[in-house]
Image 1 (tube, rainbow, N blue to C red):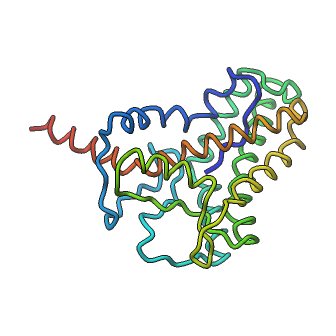
Image 2: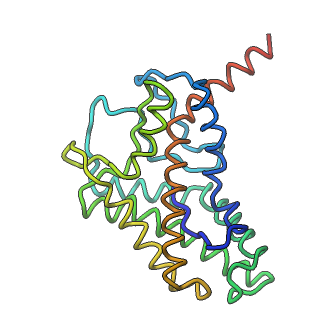
Length: 241
């Protein structure tokens, strides 16, 4: 899942940087060492984090690696791009963008919201296909996030962040994550076609940097989401006793 519609002004980043905000509690768990590692053999992946954020790319582990064919990479991108959560997120981004008047050219009212929504959804759609399908296919890289699931919480946190820069190849090796960097850069470049108020190089660099930060936080959520669910279930069970 990608969140490309990022502005240079800080007040407008609150909604679009939702993953960063959600990752803050996880960071507290990491510092305190309170997240218990999970057995790699346990597949408890949830296809939506918090019931909204699509989570189709997460794979439990690397015990037996099988590369994805190009068709499956495009399937992953499609699952993310056309998930109900993506449409909901686009609506949230559109509403927040209109509220803060991020792009005056879009206007206000129902027509303005429609333009904000189309642009926000376009960001998500283009980002998904660029980073999960087109460039991974062209560069023979694997777009999935492979959970580590075991080890100390600090090492797992670092591992999750590192996956932004280092990824797996279709041949089973590892290399720099060109798909992440080039894919997001391409998506940001395309977005300048419909964001008339945000077309300078400074805006582009800011969007790309924030996108990489959001993707890091997203990986942290994917790594620890099953642990958080387990902890919540245990608390509910203890409260019911």
